[in-house]
Length: 376
Image 1: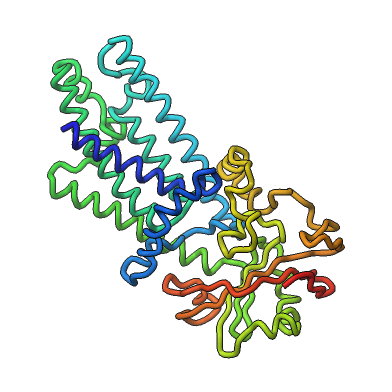
Image 2: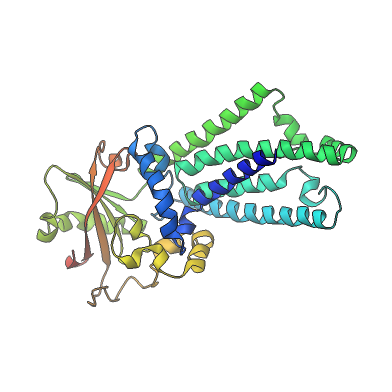
């Protein structure tokens, strides 16, 4: 049984390691993590049957373009923080009882439900599914919920052996994961019904993720013309794209880089956009773990969910700052990263299909007002 519990516990740890990918990316351990994890992601992306697992279903690099998606993103932070806080409170209670030999933890949060620690971990995991919304994380969350249930049943068997009368009476007045009166209404009695409930949960979670992906793609700030789709990191840049993108594509320096009969996806972002290294290799300074601000970046990612997308790691103003090349400029400077896309469906939304292959080709830094090209 100890081996079983160790295996299940290891699976939970693995889930949080994968789910907390973004935190590891901005830590000194990024190189080691990706030397192990990246081949796994590449293997998933290689096969049509598993390619969707490495895709995202909510905006993770783009500022959410509407109130609905912003609310979901904030909810992710709330669930993650509240879940982890609740878990640590439960852990303190359990280990205090263990060290002081007070017996089973039956008070505090445990007076309402028998396994608040697993409920809190599930809530934190659900928040993590929003904070770093890969399909893989959502699938593993469903797996983790099943593991939490198995661990809970195992713990109850152990408690009944150690405290038979007290714990049996405790079980009569409490539910496993919900207060007794609510859980009795939702609980499944037979193994078959429990399996059906679990499969239904998985279908709702994964199906909901696909619906969120469809909604997200159709609400992105997009510009589309002549086989080129442009997406703005900042929703307020959409009018600028609508006004200037066609002129930008006609610039000789840009036009010579574009191949005929090829399709392109263009990310339009502030030059100091902090996550541009996830789109293409734009320089070592844009590898997140190079910034040496791990704690502040983690705090921003969780507590200030939009600030890290709107501001670069220099937190510069939009107007009147220096370009990395050393040139001073006035106006709106944006970096455009051009990716060639293959196997795309009908544009513009087809550019974001799960099966689409995206290959970075070049980038250009352009002042939108006067079409001044600073760098390509």
